[in-house]
Image (cartoon, rainbow, N blue to C red; front, top):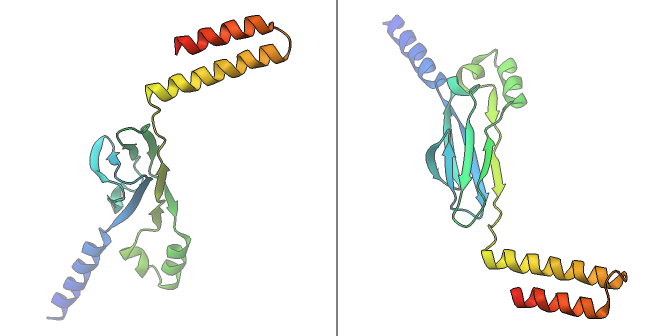
Length: 156
């Protein structure tokens, strides 16, 4: 009977040893689609579980949201110094239950894609500033400045 309880403890230990690590992925603004290795895993904020035996594999992460530039990154694992210390003080028992590595959380600030009108306005402003600089440095006359300025504003 004693060997059965020992076997139960060993089996329980091995089942717990197969735990996973959680990768927390967030974005600003929230609600962006998160793809890990090209598979949709949810919307930010999302917790992605990585099986312990796959921690050393590469995981490519893509975060996308309508109206924002997509962002590509990857999951990075690091040695969890506190877990290593805990494993030493527990004579390795902690290492049975927890990986000695953790996954760094990811936070991505998404950049809005400028609308076509915003892009045209930005280009017009830049052209007008350049024209003004030419006039201020004496490279073009007042008459040439006004003519080119009018052309730029009419083309808008």
